[in-house]
Image (cartoon, rainbow, N blue to C red):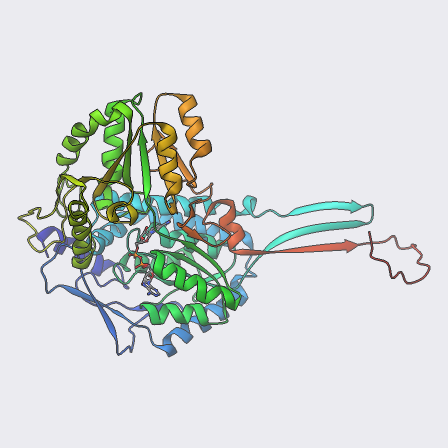
Length: 517
Ligand code: NAD
């Protein structure tokens, strides 16, 4: 490890029981205990910038261990679901305080395992923290409905927890996405089993310890590690009532198709291809900075990364300046000051990204800025890809696929209508942004463009947690989106009671067989 990473790894490992940043085996967290797995299969993971022999091992959780996690969560549900809502709210208050207090440690763990820059990792924690903060309002947001439907009859509707729930999370936001589920599943009275990405579970392990300190009873929040076999157990176990998945299309479709026929609720946020439409009347300086930041930030490994820039009309003249801004971004390790772009997650990811860059030329497009072969002397083994800008048409592989790397694909359109047509023909629907100074243009765009999250002069329109995540088309499977009001809907079932309290002296004549109205 580099000296900076070594110091961070020592600090994180010394402070947090469940982490394994210095290398070695990562524990499961079951029923309030950090336990070493007896697995005979271990997933070997190398951090994205380190010397080649630094590795961490995640267990493929055994069937017995998985069963123990489900049993712990099922037992805990009995008491947690009947714990008063005020108490559950108080745990959220304490949790948000603890996360804030220890956010730097979580961020360090993220940089060590995932590679993003320290500032960006703090944003990852911060966006998750906002979900916990919003969850503290549960005593208002979970209020039910009541109506006096007749002088002696009331109907009221409550939202009750489902039981044991599960979250299967991706590598790219190791804190934020775990907290989407950790906060909302538990504050509504469910228990949760998290299967974090095998690449970077350290943040989840710190969150587990913080949940414990905040007062979540043993078994309410559990962590099991593994890959497809463990995920399949989550899909199949009848005690698990709902699954929140965030990740790639293949795994998400598999989980949705396997779990929903068994009667489970599944919400699955999938891949994306987010377009920025750049109109000639936009504020050039702010727009180019915003587009470069959102295309290359987190090395392009955000599901809301702007991966396509559609220059409309004369806005094309700004392309050389966009390239200059991309070139100015510094590629290095996430702990280095002034780093803008860290490594991509794995050697395989780097090869895949470079393959897409090569395909542009093979298919007749242009590589305007080539990030392949970027040299970072301090980290010769890192999985680095420099900022890359390619010009393509929409039939090319680089346009058709989610590259998930620091690659911006430029396509051109003569008019706003053409740009909207391109976006709406794309199979994904996570986000799209427009840069313009015209209110009429912006209104037309937000009305006609399909994707579920629209930015107007905003490059990364990720909704704050009082709103729903609203990706659509190929970017989502399920019916009930993540967080916001629908997040509470996902983790609760409605129960509606109709109560008749006739006056003590009320008299009945005979049994009525008609449908009561
Ligand atoms: P991934 O699909 O490889 O992994 C996600 C989770 O699924 C992990 O926990 C992994 O262990 C598990 N998994 C992987 N393959 C599996 C299989 N064959 N069977 C069962 N489980 C499997 O995704 P990733 O590479 O970690 O994350 C990147 C992807 O996530 C990108 O496509 C990105 O767009 C997407 N993502 C989407 C959102 C969103 O909100 N739409 C947010 C973040 C990431």
